[in-house]
Amino acid sequence: MPNKITIRKACADARKGMKPSVQAGEFIREEMHMLNAGASSHVRSWQQAIAVGLSEARRAGIQQDSKKK
Image (spheres, rainbow, N blue to C red):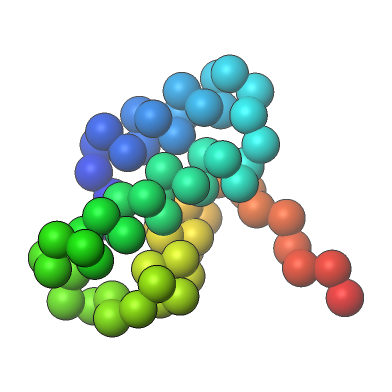
């Protein structure tokens, strides 16, 4: 569950008109910070931190572009 501060930062980025990838970066940054601190038991690598951060951003309502095929 993302912090309220992270959600506020992402909403501020949205108000500024920044891209969704920048908004989702706040969630990824939080996961990586938890990984470095050792507080995150469900993330073991950087790739997992990115995946979890993106999924939390999607749950928070940030629309990401789908992968191009």
